[in-house]
Image (cartoon, rainbow, N blue to C red; front, side, top):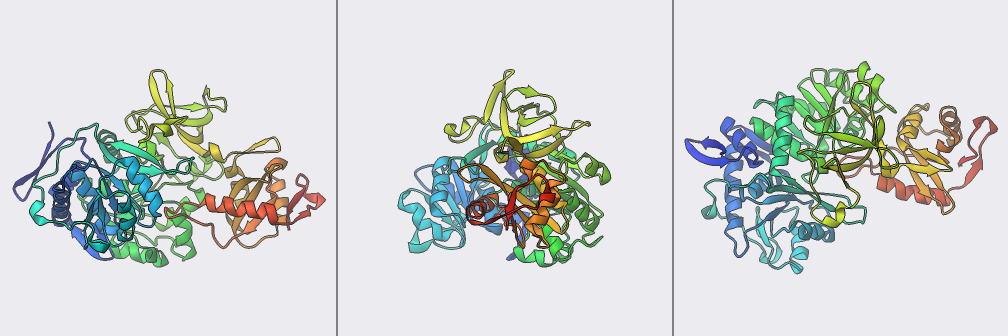
Length: 542
C-alpha cells in the first residue's frame, strides 16, 4: 500500500509512505504554484521542479546499458535541489557532491557509493574530464549545456517519466560522506525507512505549513540541508538559498524573503553580530530558529533569541550516521543557561523510539557521563565500506548501537549536555583535558569574545594552544586569569589572537586549520617565564 498523489487531475505517484520523494509529491499536491526553491537566479514552483525532475530522471534512465543505482549530484543552487529530486524520481540513491572539492576526493566518493550517473551544472563541469578519464561509462547529465569536449547528454523532454519510479523501504535514499580517520571520506547510507521515521518525528514536533519560507544555509553535502528541503517540501513550503552576501545585512534579507524558519550552524550568530544584525526585534518574521553542527553557546542563543523575538529557538544535535539530528533542546532563557555545561546549550532529549546508553573510558555502560551510543530506526547499520565499521558499532543486549564519539552528561531532567569529542580530549602532564572547558574559561577572560583550544605534541609532551578573538590580550594576562580558575595542567602554554576563528565550508570552526597553525606555533614560538603570581603555570607565549 502507498499514498496516492494527484496533480492537475492526474495520478502522479503511488509512493510508499517510506519514500523520501513522497514528501515532495505531498508538497506538490498542496502548493503546485508556490515557490519550491529559490536562489539568486530566481524561483521554481513545485510544478516546475516536478516536471524538471521527471525529465532529468527519464533522461538518466534512458541511457544504456546500466540503470543507475546511485546518482551523484555535482551541482549547486536550484540545479542541485532539482538534481536531488531527479535522482530519487529515478529510483536511485542520491549522492550529493561538492563542486569545489578536488577531483581525487570526488572520485573516491563516486567509486565508494557506486555512482554510475552524474547531474552536473556549470559549477561542477570542470571536474568532468578528470572523472571520466578513468570512468568512461559514467553517464553525465549536463543540465545547463554540454560538458567540455561534448561529453555528456542534455535533458530530453521526450524521455520524461510519467511518474516517479517505485522504491522499497529498505532501499538507500541517499549516501552522505563524512570525514574519515584514515583520510578517506566515509559513506553513510540512509534508507528511505530511516529518513521517513526521522521526518515523521519532525512533522509531529514542528508546525510547519505551506506559508513558511525556509532558509537554506547548508551545502548539499552537509546532511542538515536535507532537513530544510524535505521539511519544507513535506509541508508545501518554500526553500530559499542564502548567499554569502546576505550576511552583510541578514535582517534585511530575512525580511525581504519573508523567511520564517531559520536553520544554520551556530557560527552564523557571530557573523551576524559583527554586522550589528542582532539588535532586539531585528528579525520579527522568524517563527523557528534552529541551530546544529557545533556547540551552541548560551550567550549566542540569548542574543539571537532577542533578535528573533517571535521565534522558538532550538539546539539540535546529531551525527550523519543517526540521520541528520537525533536530539533537540528548546531554549528557555535562564533555565537553559542554568542547565548548561561550559556555557554550551544542552543538546536535549534523544528522539522517541531510540534507546541510548553511555560508555565510560573503559567502554563500560555508566549512568551519568560518557560516550553517547544510540540505537533505533535512525541509526545506520554500517558504512558503505565495511572497513569503516570498525570501532563505530557496538553489539549489546541484542542491539546494534552506533558509537557517536561524543562525550555527554545526563542532566537532572534527563536531557543531555554535550561536553566534546572523545578524539579531542587531551592528556596533558597527567591531566585529562576537555578543550571545551578551557575554551569556556577563556571566554570568561576580559576582552575575549570567542575561543578555541587544541592540543599538539611537541615530541616531548602534549601542550595546549589557545586561539582567541575579541580584543588583543597579553598571553601573560590571559594565563594568570585562567590559572585562577583552572588546574595547572589545563592552562594553555601558547596563545594566538585572531580577528576571527577560521571556519570551513559548512560554517563550523575549522579545527584542522587551527591544529596545523598550533603545531607551527608550539614549535617556533618563544616562551617567557611566567610571573610567580600566576601560580600554577610555568611558561606562556611571548
